[in-house]
Length: 233
Image (cartoon, rainbow, N blue to C red):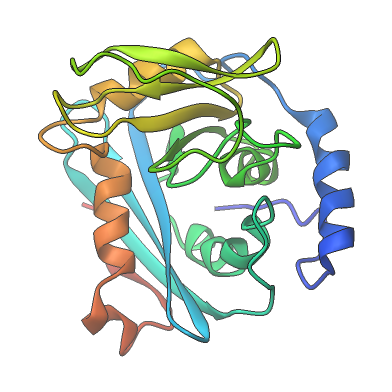
């Protein structure tokens, strides 16, 4: 998969904020895709010194796994809320480069525009990949909201003052919601619809749930360097 090299990753937090502000000018909050055939989930797990990224590509209609890719990177950026992309992307990008089946939609375990500078992981990498992306986080980062009813499919809006930046979505009855926001190349309504359609029996949609499992696999951590784990069918 081709990836735009638009900035360096070995930067200071101050430089990272400047990069985010510059990239925010490129955000597209409308659907830029046609039919969805493939969907991917992306997640990153951490040890003390390294980050492990996993990307799982699924057939959208059946949610069957088509391809799995993993990679790791040394952690060279401090933990700073709002700048987590600079810790996670150095592992995610090598994994993404290995993909042979290019997804139409990417789901990231992180924020989209529900971010103080509208530049969460899904938005930042959506711009770099030039693909439609969705942020589906387990916890909120920015904005105010009310809890939705405990019924699957119900949601409430996340707002920053008067601006709608995401939704608190109940993907399973009487289970904690997820926090959905557009990344890039998609609108909020469609992001919610896709997240729900990709959710089966668990709180998390299948693409990010499977990527989360893969990234946290202890056996994988012992040998992964940056390779394809499952060949395209």
